[in-house]
Image (cartoon, rainbow, N blue to C red):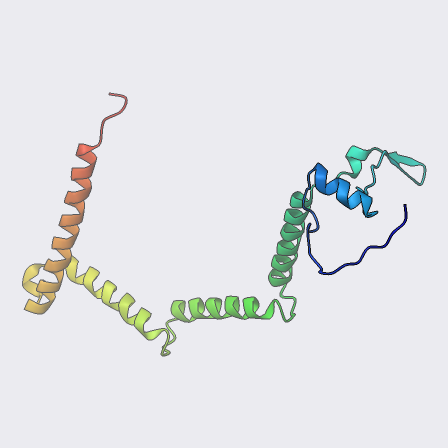
Amino acid sequence: MKGSVQISKRTVILKEGEEFDGDLGLMLSKLGINPIIAGLRLCGTLEGGTVFAPSTLDINFEQFEGDLISYATGAFNLACNITWFTNQTMPTILAKASREAFAVALEAAVATADTMPHLVGRAHRGAMAVAGSLDSDALDDELAAMLGAAANAAASASAAVAESDSSAPCRGR
């Protein structure tokens, strides 16, 4: 039985990857459209006299990706630590150099716009420590008030710690 088919309207009845039932399969088969599953099942490989089993050739892609990321991170860290200048390492190397220069400037008490707040803070802490060791008669009112505020804050903090320690359950007693 021969005949002709006239297509009056294009219609998508199945998208790639979708599964279909028996009736649709029969209709597609009559039109000469047959589903196939293509693949390769590896039973082993021979390379240079060595036989590799399929389990050896199985690649865990998640672990492989993690290993690649780890190796790249290690290479970047090594390049930064040996000061290897590239477009990728320069920002990190310069940031590290800046931090180290700032630390040296603070230690050497070099007065710059960046170090002055830290140096003044350090001097203030030192002055307060010296003032705290003096007799209260040797202090002016402003300094005594500053020391009193600091003493009150320290007393409050130690009382809070003592209270939390006493309310904690005792173990081993």
